[in-house]
Length: 185
Image (cartoon, rainbow, N blue to C red; front, side, top):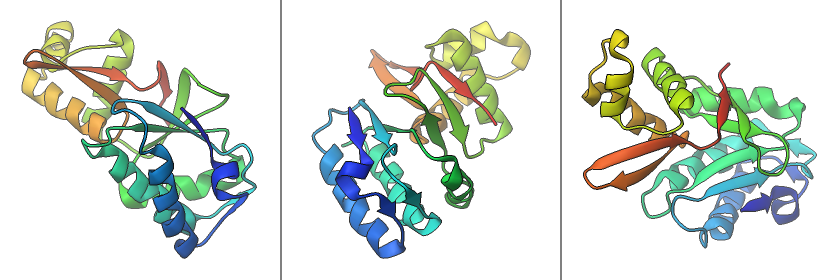
């Protein structure tokens, strides 16, 4: 699904109160999406976005998307460079990460926000193989000295950050990236 944020919320997204209102509207607009869906939030028609709006709208939206009843994977597309510094500050403050792409349904995105070294290594490993379980990563990367349990914990953390998708296969959880390529900053 591609959600045109400018059409749905307006061209000027600023202020905490408006952000709270817009968070509720975003939840309403995305609530019909099936669990596991990638949703592209298209900011092409938005002229202004402030940090206070991002903090009030996107921070809780990512938490809402991670709820198992929703299980959505937001990707921000067509953002203007002028407000990316605010997005990065909000990501750091909230300990969140955002995927930022260009075009309608990008296969490549830039990661905004930070990962700890273990999470970063895990994301890089999964991007190489496209899909895996923690046990498979342990077998494929014996030189890393990381056990399957640690890989699984890191995969789960990246899933909760909405950077990886997860599908249950029997007793295993298989993980795959939300987009094929992620540029780590």
